[in-house]
Image 1 (cartoon, rainbow, N blue to C red):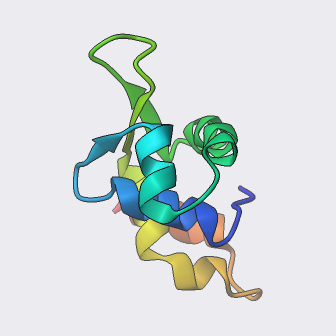
Image 2 (image 1 turned 90 degrees about the vertical axis):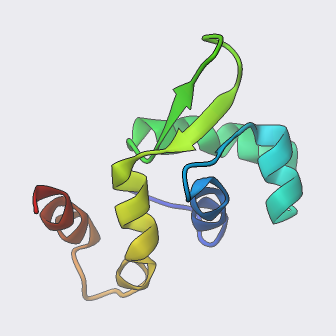
Image 3 (image 1 turned 90 degrees about the horizontal axis):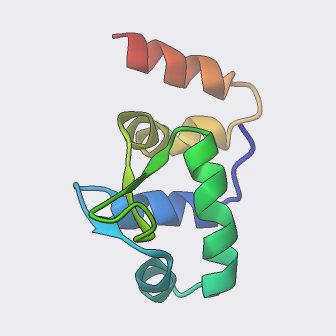
Length: 95
């Protein structure tokens, strides 16, 4: 998993706490370019960190997944060169 630091963590933070949001609002909340957020959300979804939710299939609403919460909680481990981050996340999800 290759995350864009700090943007991807800011997106996850904006969606934490059970909030649903779209790229326009997230870009406003974290003060980043909307087009860039539009490119990052599908990547985060491919990693299983966020998922697209309804009410309509193409509503553009996303929410954070359990895996996304774990990644957010272990940001320090991601930024450490001597840690197998994906193993940390997998171990946390297995518990």
